[in-house]
Length: 89
Image 1 (cartoon, one colour):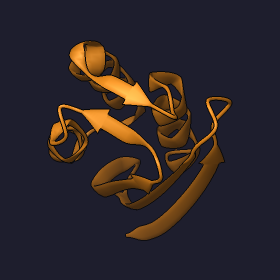
Image 2: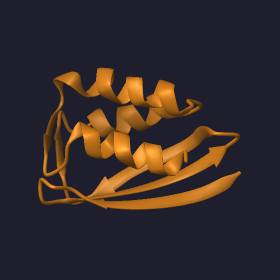
Image 3: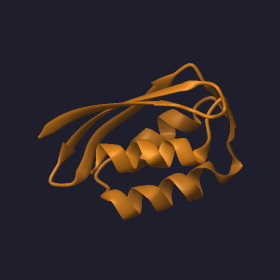
């Protein structure tokens, strides 16, 4: 198992920091942190749970689908997807 950390400075002005444990190209654990806001507030925590055990393509689709009704302030869905790309590359 490998532990990884990625930091992205969003074009929307905030910072996204991602910590993950990766095993055989799959997310064993992932935590999104930073100084952004998401509404509903539990949407990011719930997304972290949904991403566990997924590989890159599955994770990218899950992020896109799960966050379609979430309002993100300071970061974008693309920032989240890029962070996962970096973690799993």
